Length: 167
Image (cartoon, rainbow, N blue to C red; front, side, top):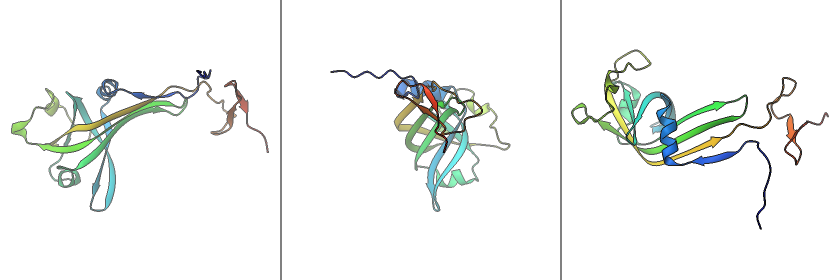
């Protein structure tokens, strides 16, 4: 017996690996998570996704240069719309490898591109993920009007909104 629910709100679905790489290719900034001597840390970084890897650059004197080589990391990229409760997220997990310039096979022209923050970013890392996952949340069928605050729109079994009870 098959049960069917007719609702269009907040459909969450998994992305396959090819879709994840398509989403990654369309952005320039992600968040890198790793552990240093004080515990977990998450930093925003600009990146390039190319040929099954994510390429990151940093200055040779900064925190990443000291703590990142050879470490297992997580890298997340996403885009969210708080108005209609939709968005997507891609998560990569793997080891950050320091790549020497003489061994570099980075995307063409990437090293010539200016990083967002000022300064030289000559240390290169490649994240070749062991795990690539992603999720897509389709827009909700209801966008609350100005009179509703978060959490005040509720749904009947039909999926139609009803005002929250007044107390």
